[in-house]
Amino acid sequence: MNTRLPDNHFTNQVVSEILIGLRDGLTRFSGTSRVGVIYRLTVDDDYCVCDPAGLLRGHETKIRAEFFDENDRPVSMHHYLLDTHYSRIDRVDDLELDGIICVGGQSGPVPYQMWFTDHHPEILSTGPTRRWLEHAALRFSHDAANEQELYSGISGRFLREYATHAVHDHILHELRRANSARTDNTFSIYQILGGILAISRTREELKSPHGELAFILPEHVDTVDFLARFHEAELPHLDNHKHVRKLLQAVQKFRNRLVSDGRQILGIARGRIDQFHLTADFQGLYGFLRVNDQSICSFADGAYSSATHQAKLFQVEEALLDYEIDSSIRSSLFHIISSIIHYGETENFGCAVVLDLNQPITHIAGQNLQQPLDLERSNLLDLACDLARVDGALQIGSDRKLHRFACLFDGPAIANEDRARGARYNSALRFTSCHPNTVIIVVSADRPVSVIRNGYEHVNMVSTADSTAQIAPQKLQDWLSIED
Image (cartoon, rainbow, N blue to C red; front, side):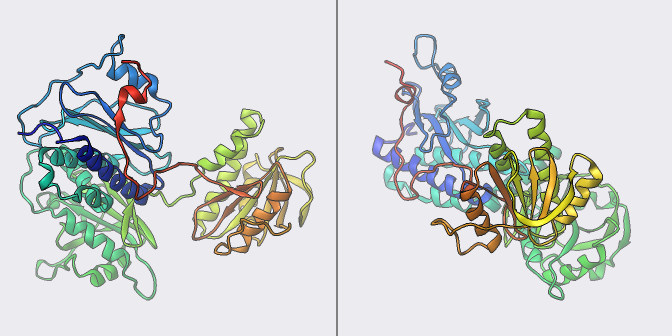
């Protein structure tokens, strides 16, 4: 068996295409994502690294200690499988880098490889992402085992569209952990995943579905405590999405759920299911998929993702860290803002909050209060949440008090306005461009939270390589600036 890629140009092409496909796929699934890889093609080769967006920067000390000895010579950390098939990949220990998900392995064609991506602060589960990285390792091993003439170039394209497969692979991973002896194919995971997406897109009387649909292994059906069991001769088929959508109306409340064996709808049950099971929790325009009551992903618009469908407030935290505020005050302000934003999100209305850190606070046209409301008092915070329903913004000072509501922003037009966004968003851009030390959090009913200050939206600045440019690996020694 050929144990290394034929030449550096081919190696670079394979690594580049896998990384670009992996990056694009994970970005769709979890938001803007960086990726990287460290690998070794033979037991005598140098370690190579490809880190096109600087994902691994800041971790040089730990990487150096892992891959080089005290004399800066590469270490052989693992036994190598020199004569095995490309599909046998033995896992190696993760590097456990903060803020990074990594998966590595060794095979005959690639004695060492470790794939990396961002660990986003707010995702439902790292499981599908880990399965994605495992498949990247499999694709690299497969491509390394083939001659250049046999290379199809499909790896990158497949990894770009891997979302549903990653969810499938993670469910299968959990199923094998729970039921390692299982070998039959009576539980069709792909059929279930396709059915969930189709049902989520099916409306009844113009309304999106609500309610739970649980899937249990056929041999465990008798362990379910059914409230109502459908007649065996008339079991609705999962593929009849319109029929299943109608049945979901019967379990929208009272914590009841439909139960399926993956092929048919068996009845309605209530209470805990102790055996391995999946649950699709339909919540209107989106929903969540759980394995044994642990959420692994969400679904919306006909696709799976890691989104929580809640406001991503880490950008609010990042903005607060840029101001010289006592840590206890900062924590209290974050709690207040989070409470208001999540309330608007739960009740499905848009709103805006002005965090005014000026002394004294800025005068804004709006409804003044005779006495500011102390938002550290839970009953007044609840009142502020309801006041956020009123058109206009809440004005909160660093004293953690609500000074005005129904505030209207003004300011001259600026160059970076976005006409695709609403008046609330663009008015916030204008206002903050004229008023320093103000942060405006804009919540739209159908968009993520926007954190705006100094006339710009505060975004998570994650750089990525050009989508079409080839990404070139380099020696890990050079990347670490280690002298040979």
